Image (cartoon, rainbow, N blue to C red; front, side):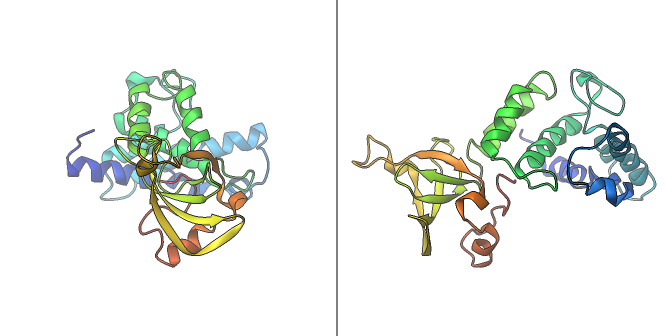
Length: 241
């Protein structure tokens, strides 16, 4: 979005603090396994106003962080909470954090369900463009993280199981990957692979991503790979940013 560094830092602070109100939600609700009752959900929804109040009482917080803490569960069509405001009343930062918060929630393990793939998350976000989420910001988000974001676990058409390292800007369906498993076995020496070099018009054995996999299903321990230095600075949760 061509933001200056000062604005990026402000947005980053807003994103880091957006859920601070959850510190005031009772643990038995916050960590509950299974669906909330209606009454429990009403309590959970209060984390937005709690967050605004906590930040308002704190010194040195960006004023924009109050808007984001209060409004990150609002929707541009007015169907969100706590106030039911529409897009024209939501700040740009609030709209942006609403998207990244949803992406993170979908692609992270929760006490009540397993993580879904980043591709699932992008499909959900895209289906809610113009209703729940700002359509322009959803498009920008997809462009930024790519179809296969760094940290995603994928299987190639030859059976290689890989971790996505980096998106190829010119060929978003062919990222740089790290081959970590083959035929059900972890490789002692994971190997980087640039899928853009293995297109049909460049290579007699073209390679492409066949499907995305949750790391647990694929038998991939992202944390262990990162501890070995194999992943550099990419995230260690599926699809995380």
